[in-house]
Length: 509
Image (cartoon, rainbow, N blue to C red; front, side, top):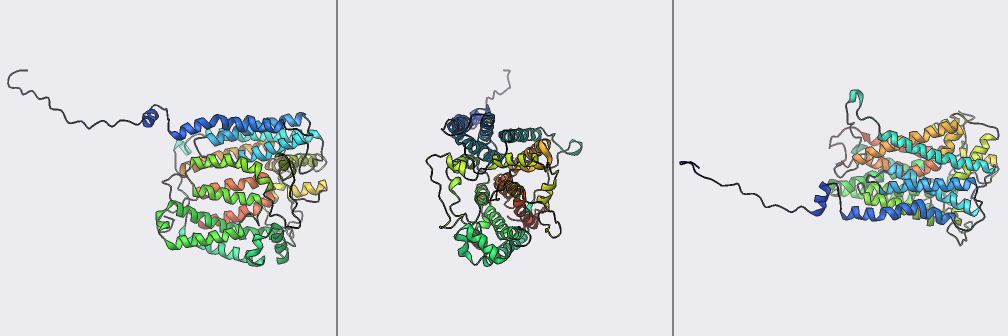
């Protein structure tokens, strides 16, 4: 250095280096090694093999009187395909409630249970047509499942952006606080009328036979078929459930709500009300499944672990518990428990008649009436029109086919595949299932974006999607005409509380 210069080697003090945890360091390179991820990786192989290979093969090798014909092998292929898709839903990194509920229903009601029936040679509802109709029905279900997946792929590759390539985020639909209070008042009013019409709360803890008898004594099931019964039960149960879900969502996600005694008291009163009108004793199993599914994902809105556990455990419940869950359908005198030594027999003797009823629908159409070209769907959409105005209003598809078969019990299912096929044929059914897959993927994607810890308590999508996912079991099972009443009532209730405004003085906070 030259003279006159001052050598300075003074450096700014550097902060001590904080060691990066292995998980974060691995995450920077795309190698996530958190315990949850390790658990998912460890369970992925046995879970996928269990749903896709082990359970179908365990059912297929059981002794029985069934024949290994084309229907059996197509049914086995359908079960394996549905098992692979259900495994993908359980192991996905995102919560896909609508797609998960679809594949759960297909795997159990259209896959494992009919496979057990094919092995044992027993069915809960007689298949009156030729064996070829059963084979064709199973093949159509498989085609519909593939079409559903095609719709999901189309939604995934949908071009981003709106008009002129711009991306516009729509305003979230919120719950208006004052309207929620009005809905709560209406829920207590409607449910109170429902309870009083049937003779008091005690009836709801006896049996479903007592409920039906109470409705008949109230004089609301006469005249226009079962429309009066559907409206009474719908208004007596749906507003109470929706108000309870919305208050639950508010309490789970809002510290403000948990500090308000009036909110807690209202939630507790709604809880008691739902224990009366929506309990598993007085309601069909599929409706109580809707209640439990919706409540579970309302209480745990962002838990991926709970989503995985729910789908996985639902298979166990469907196998071991659901076939025996009709204990309270009858009173003590008329209840006849199933005596069985095989875990397959309850699935062959109970409610899993979807594949068989689809085959019977194909036989019914081929026997003369032909396709209806939207008439059955119109009856479901305009279910509220009385028969005095619409003289030839369509009946439930399951009831119509059951009466043609000559069965004593016409309370039979009509899965969505059969509903679409009877109206629009194979092409219409395929297009309908493809549209369902597209819509389910779009809604699931929107739900995944909205259901976060920072989502406002009043976000309606975080309540509506779990409710629709639970009710989809009823919609997929059918008939659609029976399911339409509660859908319309729920839509009215949601329209009452919905608002686009984000003013904290008017929406939940």
